[in-house]
Structure formats: structure tokens, C-alpha cells
Length: 399
Image (cartoon, rainbow, N blue to C red):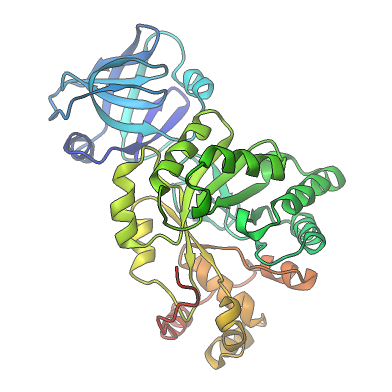
């Protein structure tokens, strides 16, 4: 990631996949670059870079948030549209047009470009165990543990969501294919009214399925209507499929309109990510994959994290295929006994210490409360290694 420090604002910029952006990153590796910028044409802030970068010009129409190299030696941040021959260096993440214009301010401004977000209270992708959150590359904070709602019927889902929120949890995962987005929305609305929880504290993720990719506008609008909570904190593509890039690009449009805050992918691995990422403008903030002690993705997880993308594990307790075996595993239970906690808590804590967000699914009130109680103990390096040794590479679902 690249960060532009302007006044008290820090803009998070996802670099473009081209030689110009790579050269800009290499320049910043030598030290921060400060650019004196001014408004031009009612659509951009522009200033001299002080050096030449290679160009990859093409005729494009800019969008708010585009960071552009002009004539090889000028940097521009667009807050409106313009059509010309430009080289795109990257895109500002997580801000609507109005928020971007407020951050840039009116008139002249000093913009310090850096590979470090010094003014931010947290580092992107690094877990804050005190706040129990992680800062996404979109600029938003996300809780690091929450609730999965797969297979929960309407009433159970509403009650589970309310239980999670009442007991301090703030992250909820659903999907079109789960058939319970309306129940999640109802649970959120009831909890907000009954417990006085502000909407901004709650983080809801949903997903659109490949059979919706041909008409993503209808799919997104349906999710917004069913959830009925004002905006989507995050939307994911459920897994790769025909027209997945097309669907993601429409999701990008909804981000710019403020209807979706962050984007992500589910069931994407190294090969899929290498093919997909160069085709989109807004970097995914999250990749959600099957991860548990019997299927650990020890190569995939660091690959994703090194790209500034947070990893989230579904089926963290093994799902339908491995839950019973994991909860009865001798190694895990020995560790649980040493800390006076449950086997489930050990597994979830192991994920957190790897930097993997957890969303265990449950309709059991006691289990939901227990799954949130992960911060009164810490696994030793030896215990982490013992669990790492349990990896079988056995995946439950096909994708």
C-alpha cells in the first residue's frame, strides 16, 4: 500500500499493476516524497513529482480516487472525472467522492507520499488485540472475531445475531445462498433498538453467488433490500465463476456510491488471485477461505497477507467434515486443559494469533458467548507449533 498524508488525513492507495506504479513504490522505498499540489480544472489536485517515472499512458476517463502520473513527472489525485491520455498509478480506497474532497481540502496542499501510515493509529492488516479489530486496506476497521450464519433458520439467526451483539461481538457473516440475509438484518435492527448499539459499530458481510454474476446490480440491490441496514460493510464474491470480474467491477461502482464500504473474495487461492487482481481497480480488503487445524493453508495465508489483504477463515472449527474430530483432538484438548479453556477456544485463538479472522457459525447461545471469549489467554510458540503439526491438507468443500 501507498499512503498520502495530507493535513490530518491519510489516504490509503492501492498501487496499479504496472511498471510505473512499481517505479513509484521503488522511489518511496528510498524515502518519503512530498508534492506541493494545487487544484486544477475543478477535477484534480496536481503537483510536480521532482523526477521522471516510466509511463504507461492510455486514454482513460478518470474517476474520483484515481492517482495518476501525468507526463511522467506530475502526480495528480482526481476528485472528479476527466478524459485524457494518462498512466494510472493507483486508487484511493475507502472514501466516497465527498469524503475524498473533504480530505483533500480546497486550494494548495502538501501531500507526503509514503509506504508507512504514520498518522494512523493502526497498521493495515495487523490485529489490534486490545480493540479486537483489524484495519482493512479500505480504511475501515473490522472486528477480528464474529458469527457465521450458514444453515441458520430465520428465528435462530435473529436470536444468534442479537446474542452476539448483546455480548460484545460486532462481526456477522451471511450470504445470498444462506437464505437468511433478511434474518441477519432483523437481528441487527432489533439489537440496535434494544441495546443502543450504533450502526457504525456493527460490521456485516454478505456475498453474491456465481449464478448472480450475470446481473450484479440486481444481486447487490437485493442484498441491500433484504438486509435493510443502510449500507453493506463488505460484499464478497462467493467463489470464482463466469463474469466474476464483471460482478466485482459493478461492486466497485457501489463502493464509489457509498452503498458498499469494502470488497472481498471468498474461496480464492494463489492461482485465482494472480489472475484476478490485475483486472480490478479496488483491491479486495479480505479473502475468506476454509481454514482450520486440519486444513491450514500455510502457503496461501501469508501470500494473501503480504498483499495487504486480511484473511478470514470460514469453518474455523472444521465445519460439517471435521468439527467432531477437532474438538476431540488429543493435542488440542491438552492445550485447552493447560489454559482452562475449551478446545473450540484454543482453535479460534490459534487462528487469531496467525492473523486470521474467525467467524464460527452457531445457533447455540452458550457457544456464541464462548467463541467471543478469546482474549484471556495466549498460546505459546510451542503450542502454536503443536497445532501447526496437525495439518492434514484435508479440505471439506470443493471450492
